[in-house]
Length: 205
Image (cartoon, rainbow, N blue to C red; front, side):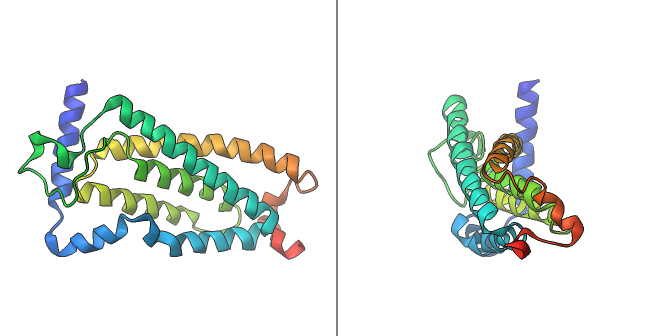
């Protein structure tokens, strides 16, 4: 069962990785760097401040920072436990994939996938009552994580499991956020319902 799953994982990697070509390497090298997504982060940061006010926004930013730290460190525990070689470092895949980047660290699970999905899912939960079409935020982890397959740094299973772990971490942090919010702002327990009334928290501050 596991051998069959891993074989399918390798076959899917070879297929997805083969869709790339050298002229597009620069684009995906740009996409895979977290710092190049700062404009996207700023947009969502603005939306949080606009709709929830600065007090809630600061709490949310703190929670996201804590979420990323927790997700990143637990992801490293998975990597060090399973010790799965990255595709570009696997001798069995030499000649079968284009490894644009090679690294000696382990691949399972993907930190890019887990961190981006955790952040996106948490922001989706926060902004969904206020911003229409928030589902578009999931384009970020999808594109971001595919860059890892394109570059030969991760298997599809690394990405999928990273997504699942990121969602679990986001749900955990959401519960912590809800409790913290109610303790810090006991006079504003229904602030998430303001969007339905056409009013943002920022309008009242």
